[in-house]
Every structure is written in C-alpha cells, then in structure tokens.
Image (cartoon, rainbow, N blue to C red; front, side, top):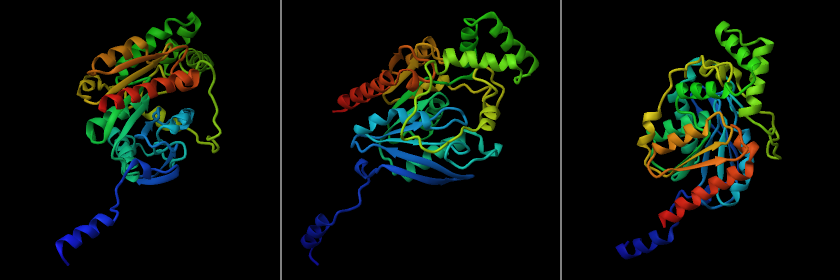
Length: 314
C-alpha cells in the first residue's frame, strides 16, 4: 500500500476522540475501594462541564439539583461520596481519610473521561476541591468555592462570633454542651436548631422534581470526621488547616458566601485575597445553604464567573 493511499484512509477513519459532546445525561456508578459511588450527569449543554462536590462530610449531592438550569449551557456532574446518599453505605473508619476522598473524585473524572472541567465545591466540598486540585491539577479549568471551609480553627472562630449574636439562653446551652460533652440534651439540640435557622438554611430547603429517590446523609461519617454540630468540632478534621495552600491555585477561582453564612463574608473575602486574580461574591439574604436561600443569585454568580473565564481564554 502506498503512503499516499494509507494517509487517505487514515483521514477517512474517525478516530475516537473524547469530547464534551460525548458526556450524556444519565446516572451511573463507578468502583472505588470500599464499594461503588453513584453519579449523575444533568444537562445537554455543550460547554465545559462542572463537577460538583457536596458538603458534610457525610452529606449528599441533593442540593445540587437546584443548579439544574445550568445544564442548558453545560453539563453538571454530581455524585454522592461513598457512605452517603445513593452511593454504597459504610461506617469503615479506614475509608474516612482525605486521600481516599480525593480518589473518589478522581474515579468519577476517569469514569467520565473528563479532559477539561470546572470544580465546584460547597462547604466540606470546597476543601475536597482544593485537595483534588493540589494533587491532580490537570484538566481543572477553574474552581468555584461556595461557602468554603479550609481550616477548622478558622471555622470554629467564626462560629464563636456568630453564636455571640444569638440569645443568651442559646449561648449558655452551647457552652454547657461543649463543657460537659452532652450533645443530646434538649437545650443543646434546640440551640443547634436556632443556629441552623440563622446561619444554615434560613428560608427552608427547596425541592426538585429530579430528587425522586430518598438519599440520606450519613451521621456516622459526619460525627467521626467533624463532630455533633456545625459549631462543635471533635472529629478527625479538628486540626485540618490548608489556608496556606490557597496561594498554590493557578486557575481562575470564584469565592462565594451567603450574607449570613457560617462561612462568614469577612473570612471568605480573606480566602479570596490569597488566590491571585480570584473573584468574590456575596449572596444576599442567604445562609450556608445558598442554593436554597437565594438560588437565582447563586446560579448567576456561577454563570457570570464561567462566562468571564471563557471570554478571557478567547
């Protein structure tokens, strides 16, 4: 066969190329050490996809259904971290390490053959997004840190500031619970509810037609890694602090917080200042559950950020 004929045949043969267009809507599972994790692709848009990392640890991806409309422009990919939601349940503490959570993200990236994507993390998911990027920066086009957590010490300090704005009886109940270790008293449980109403989800959780299967969070994982409540840290993350690593981020980044967020605006603005050329946005009227308290503003900030990134790249 002549070289010219061979070249002609090679041109005609369509080689398999992994592209965004091949990312189809639907659900699936991927294997990791310890079980299977469930994922879902939402949206038929042809833009660069967004891989979303939920909070907790031990939470679920259900709140990300509120971002469904972004799928018009680009697919959003959500998954439940192993042990919670629609992924396999477990209480194996050997699996509850940051390196293992990073590998879960990597498993989804590999399964879907993502060559270029945005990372979006919420709460604990922002720490996971940072950790993933530090280990596997290739392919990450930009990062959205929504209500970020990068340091337990700073989180606890912010919580103490917020607690001081609550009624004296609530402050006393929290102080007593932390002093005695009794996190099951009626007073402490009530204090947790008051705190959540003020700084968690302020306006009630939104529902979605996509959320058709009960997917529960895993309280064991939350307690083991974090603690009994958002403002009391007793778990394995108690010394976690990666703030100094924020300066290592070299991709466009957006830091988002709610006006009344547990991740206080002053703190999140400081985090943003540590990342070169990052953007910062506040969602009015929102607590930590920004996608529930002000869904429209949350989506708009994400879309505006991505549009700015992609216009700059042109």
